[in-house]
Length: 199
Image 1 (cartoon, rainbow, N blue to C red):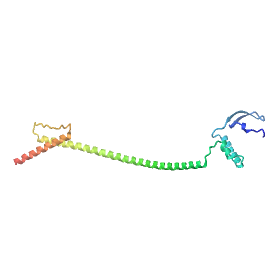
Image 2 (image 1 turned 120 degrees about the horizontal axis):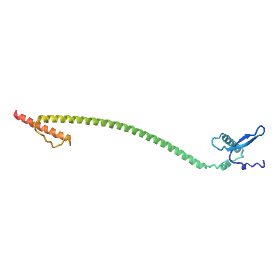
Image 3 (image 1 turned 135 degrees about the vertical axis):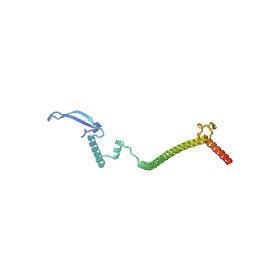
Image 4 (image 1 turned 180 degrees about the horizontal axis):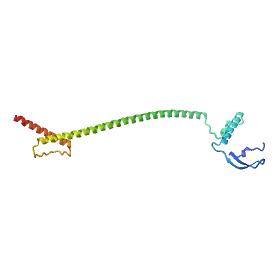
């Protein structure tokens, strides 16, 4: 044991490939490869064994916790710093819950707005449909009134007489209709007055 010096060993862990030399003649090494890869089954067994041995060494006092921390370069945190960090984590968790709650409230508002917008769109479409129906009714009514005005004008107009209007029907059909109705009313009143005189 005086000549045993494990510090000279390689830090890697190798699996050795061997080939038999025949019965009773042993084997020869034909290759080797590192097993330091995550998930390697042999490495997992070695790792578990190392941890068990480390635990035995710590329990027996042959290995001190400071040595483990120092050799493995584990970053230690002072208890006061650990408490401060734990407090910050708790505060962040509280903030996270608040943000989640606020996010939920905003999502609910968005849903409400979407429902309201859908209702408004439905009402708008209905109002627009009613407006178009009313517009169609008004156009039909205007055409009927125009036909009646034309009929009355034909009845009141002596043959060959041409009427001249100040408002062009193509430019302002409503105003032209008002002018013609007003003219018919005046003519009717004039005829009614003459009829009273003749009685």
